[in-house]
Image (tube, rainbow, N blue to C red):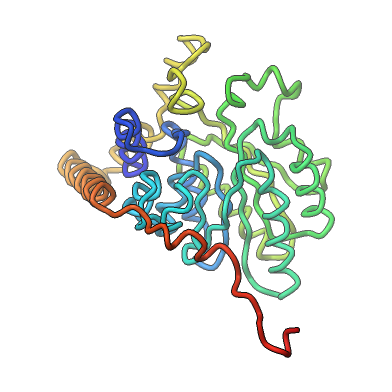
Length: 315
């Protein structure tokens, strides 16, 4: 979680200097979700991230070097300069490519889960998305299919109370997004998304259910986006200052530090070592990304189209 927070803050600095070639959608305040969810998975499970699931990438093994190189459009990025880190995927890390269309990954996640079931593979598909995505038809279609087919999937709502700038009260009349799962025939669970242990526990139960052939789970993680929708917007535009202050007191990193200290597992010396290690990794990644070359124009069409079949048999 500390690495994710430091990465997001440093990326914002680089963006302000004009080095980042994409618009940033920070996840400050939401780190516990990606961490808690992905620690509940196996390496051969797959995830489809959202705009704010940076922590999930790091848990799954994507390096900060790859992230920052992608943000700067360099050849050393995961997509070799053809795409930024904005909608990044990684086959090696079991991360399916994200999409710019809100909610569009939900049916894809259901499709991956269907493939696992048809192949009789003990694997789980996980999809992250925000509260605003639950208003899309993709949400209904994906969850309905998953429920009917009892697919091994977990759908994770990162409910940060705002769909871009729209508060959830303006686009949802109910009291629980998790309750929508009842209409699709499977459980919906609401959990404190700022408590990494609570997220992990709920995810572990959902994954165990999926592996047992009992079908999907809708996991609603209540959290708060501490910054604006993107790097182009003021951090807390249009929000009640009292609301912001109350949520900042429940910062997931502060909560987990306090929990570890309470259990006698994290002293000041250990925390200082972690902070130093995180700072070193971030600065190494910045140097690597800045010094990396831009992609060669000759690479433009490589890894874009499949090789054409030219044999007589193919004809």
